[in-house]
Amino acid sequence: MNNSLPLQPVSKGSDKDVRQFFDKYFSRSVNIAQNDLDSVIGFFENRGFDASAALAVSVVLLDQAKRDGVKIFKLLDTLKVLNGTQLSVVVAEVLNYNRKRTSAIGFKRSSTVDKVEKRNIII
Image (cartoon, rainbow, N blue to C red):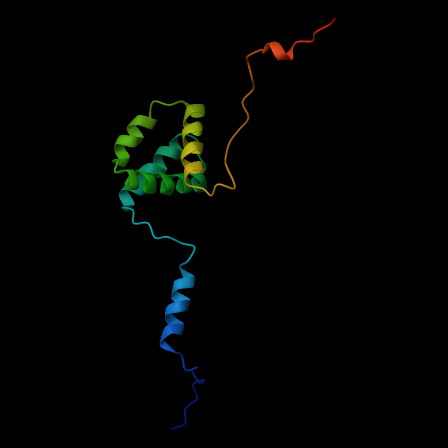
């Protein structure tokens, strides 16, 4: 039987399974309700986060809340009382908890405490 379709390679049963496994190796599926995601994204966008940053932080927070068994709206009520800097610190801690140990997010805080070791000693 002749046709104009290209020949399909004969695939072994395990070949397909192996490709599927490695295609999904570095990704983990997260099931999130759309209204929860929209609410959390809106929460962070209203506090000055960029749209892409709000999405990234929202997905991590929703996943962490799901693992910890915490309702996301209860978590947002807790975060609502924080100012911009405090919110950034909390978000950085949650993101660091969910990142590889080889990298971390942080920022430098200026030291306001004068230690005795910093003084010049003249003899």
